[in-house]
Amino acid sequence: MIAGYALGALGAVILVIVLLDFLYTAIGAAPVAPLSERVARAAFFLFTKVMPKGNARHRLSGPVVMTAIAVTWIVLVSLGWTLVFQLSRDAVVMSDSTEPAGFVRDSAFVGHLLSTLGGGPLQTQSPFWLAMSVLVGVNGMVILTLSVSFVLSTTTTVAQARGLLSKASMFAADSDEMNTIILPALADLVSNLNAMQFALYYSAEHPARRVPAGMVELAERVAPYPEQMRRLRIALEPLPGFTAPEGRLDQLTNAQFIDRLREWARPYSL
Image (cartoon, rainbow, N blue to C red; front, side, top):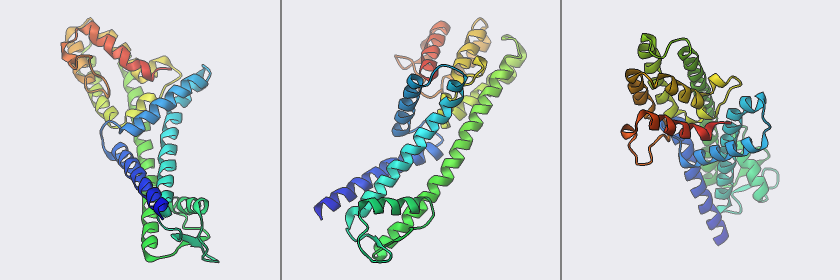
């Protein structure tokens, strides 16, 4: 019984951590939560070590990172709910014999509920656990719905960023279009990247369409022109994770700013 309580408490802790991370990342409109960020960085690091150089490396980097995050959420949520059902040996029973299902079948029961397919050949033993099973089903619907929306928003941000880099190459660095079209649009893009930071892990076969590196290249282009550089610095300063060693980007010279931007882009580069 004590072991069951311990496992149930552990499951509740896992659920709180993962669901807060998921909700904050998917609908928080802010830089991602620590769990997702660590998973993304680890997945990207492993991908760069395992995947051979080539076009496929650039096509797959973003999808691999997003898949790793989604799998982590699903596995931990499933584990959390399975552990919660360990609070009682009779929480889940076989439909045909009312025998306790056991840990493995409890896990299958949770998987069925999270996928919104129902409980399969298993059922709960009491009204309390029936109510808990409803919560699992609702949890599954929320994760499914918000995950689709989150992935769509991320890929939309990637497309927006690539489009902006394409437009930037059309205009001279000191042109009016750069001042009135590209740099204001860059500020909008940075705002979106703060909400959809995983878009930075998407690469592209064409070097000019790789977003972090493209921002460095754009900064290098406008560096000789003070007004354009002033606007670009204002647009880029809110980038997620972009800070100066002393915490004051506005105190850096233009050359130092570009060097710091180059360092910021390096972890996202293949």
